[in-house]
Each structure stands twice: as C-alpha cells, then as structure tokens.
Image (tube, rainbow, N blue to C red; front, top):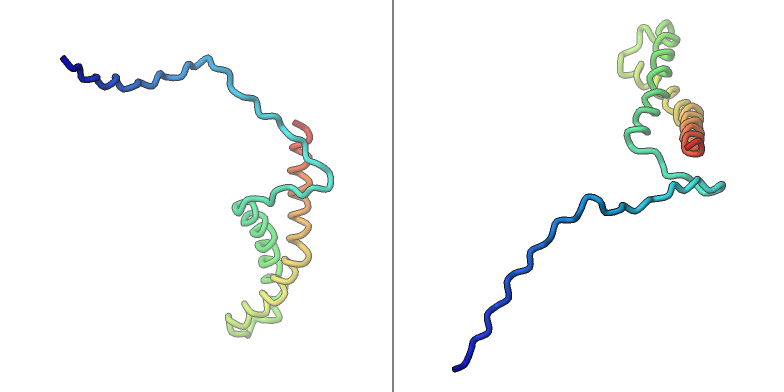
Length: 110
C-alpha cells in the first residue's frame, strides 16, 4: 500500500516572554557645530504668536490716534506693514535663538 504523507501541523507562534532584555538606546549629546532638528510646527506656531500678539497690541494702541479716521482695511494694512517686518526680521530670530538655547541647555543637562 502506498501511504499519502500528511501535512504538518501549522506552527503556532509562541508569545514573547516579558523578561526579555530590551535594548538600551544611548542618549547622544549634541555635537558642537551640528545644527539641531528644527522645532515642531506647534512650537513654531506658539513662538510666532508670542512675537505677533504683543506687536499688534502695542501697534494698535500706538497708531490709534494717527489712524482713527482711516477705513479699517487701511488701518490693518498700515499696522501689518510695520508689524510683519518687525516680527520677521527682529523678534522671531531672537525668539527662535532663545528657544534653541533652552533646548540645547536642557539636553546637555540630562
């Protein structure tokens, strides 16, 4: 008689034991001269708001007597002509530099 080979039983995956050692990921200190990763979009949005809000508030109070009779669209245009360049070229670079300093300081203390 000819015998027909039976298929092998399917292999059952064994659950991993919880006591297996986990690999340790070393913390790499920042290398001088190598730029750090840019801040997340949420951090950038918060820093931008911190720059724009005070400038707009101060600009509205300072320019109110000069632009009282202007149409609101022209008031907004005049205000943004001053606030946006001030924020982009003066305030934001300093805030991002301060943020980078704080991040580097926090990572080197660990």
